[in-house]
Amino acid sequence: MQRYYFDHNATTPVSKEVLNLYTALLRENFGNASSIHWFGQEARTRLERAREQVARMLAADPKEIFFTSGGTESNNHGVLGPVRYVGVTGRHIITTQIEHPAVMRAVGQLEREGATATYLPVGGSGAVDPDDVRRALRPETALIAIMHVNNETGVIQPVQEIAAIAKEAAVPFHVDGVQAPGRLPLDPSGPPGDYYAISGHKLYAPKGIGALYVRNGAPFESALYGGPQERQRRPGTQNVPAAAALGEAAQWVRKHAREEIARLAALRDRLEQSILDRIPGSAVNGTGPRVANTTNIRFDGIGGEALLIALDLKGFAVATGAACSSGATEASHVLRAMGLTREQARSSIRFSLGRANDAAQVDALVEAVVAAVEHLRKVAPARR
Image 1 (cartoon, helix red, strand yellow):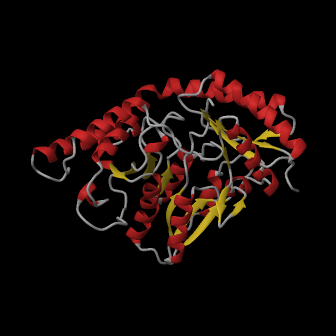
Image 2 (tube, helix red, strand yellow):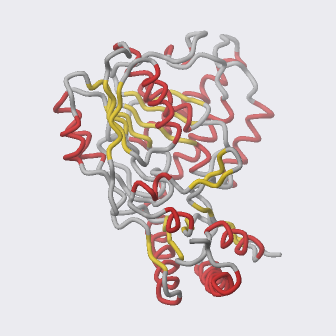
Image 3 (cartoon, rainbow, N blue to C red):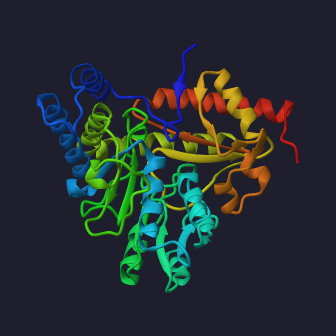
């Protein structure tokens, strides 16, 4: 069976150029970047080249970049590091109800350590109101943590406006940028905040590598203990081949993202409009500005998981907005925060496009969705 992948917000395949570099370095560049002999210095050179490539993608100083094991670790550092630096007890954090668990659970940990948190609503647009951020500020606010792009809906949060509010209030601002690079143009003036998290496997690099931008002079306390690697921000022997792979992926984004974003936007609009035109009782979740590759659509009267399975059997990989917890399917916290009912949230599918998708694949997906929805509405309507 021919299979087509429309779940790039979950992960992306490793690109050919990244894979070639990664495997070559695994074979040939095995030195420890902290060693002073030739092998170590070769590894160090590769590591610093990767740091420069990531920094150029973000329009940052290489000294502001340190490598991590991925987006979850980067977000944990970006939330825990600033607050623990000033002391957790009595501090206040501002975030939203639609954050990734890597941020929400890190904030929850700080609450257990003595901080308080405000979880701002988003409404039907899927975007937080910057004025709500301003109103939530307190004298004891130690951090604002808000994502750049929502992973389920693709809605872009107003991080530039929030960054200005944070700067005016002298409050550190962490941005989960995992879904942004390669899917919307990045600001040439630099990241929109004091901390900015990215993940390799969202931009065609391997899993297990990520990075965190920390603005020069921003407060930060490492959550890990060990050696002095990564400017004493993240101890442990660096994964040089993976860092180099992330650097190569970042270089591709810097050079080619603009035309790829335009291509993806056209495909996404083709997919979205075809589905809305042909399937009654379908609607897009999230009316705010979105990244080019993502649409989240609900289909009244059916279960999203049933539709996902039906499409998988036809060779199409998509995603629901639901997660499994203790064996029970829970409605997406993002869609629920946007005002959808549990039934609507559970009837929703996320389609996220990538480099391998083309118009023929999109058209084939539309046909499969139309047939599957029609069939499921007849034989397996969602429980009400």
